[in-house]
Image (cartoon, rainbow, N blue to C red):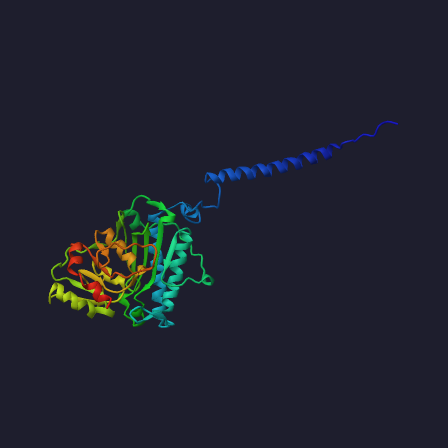
Length: 359
């Protein structure tokens, strides 16, 4: 009996070969796609990445991009602040008492502004630390994308990227500064603010006035869209202080500078810093020195500190110490801010002010 053999059909061989070629094609094309993507040759039509690549890998962030997003965040938050105030439905409530015994108020304007500002910054820069005045509720999480466009006024002042390690960055957000005045419809005092600190030092500051739609920004060793005034009165300065303790400062200021000294009570730390600068807003009062004598939170002052520093000014404790924007969220040593003045001479002139503030 002849041995049994296997007869191969020519058609079967052809089908088998075609299937094999198909498998090899898909494997190889997938491999090439992966290789091309490493060099930026693949991806979605239009080409742009969804967010900052440097921040996404935990490496570096570009401070110029952070400034662009910070300005946008302050404006977006300001839109919410203005919308709620104009609706006249504030949903006002107290978060508790301040150290001075006043109500620490919160409104829908604070909450909605905070949500917009926090999630815009967090989506753009997911690996940086963000500290904000209001609680961020995970149930309200939003993905708010940045279009990756840096405004022309920033590009004009800051021509090249400025990269720093993401882990060195701390962002401070004040979604509504001067909430007390906001509830009283004293709109000129209200601001939204963003500050970026690097290794605890303030380097980017944004102060936005929602009701006049004016925005001041500055980067230390970078550029700014705001400037100091041409002159300041150092002998009998106009001193801007908190509305809640103007009398406390007035007594010491008159003793120090004489009876010609003017005390300007005002709301909001952002407003008070702008009072020291050349701001094109008819409702903005002008002052020569900003003094605060009680405990204050860092999100209230970081943006102003960065702007003053970028313009050659100073913001310190009443004893002249620099303020670090890491660690705790507040300072006990009071506050002294000035620009184009002998700051250390001012510190020496006010030796008893911190004690007065803590009585």
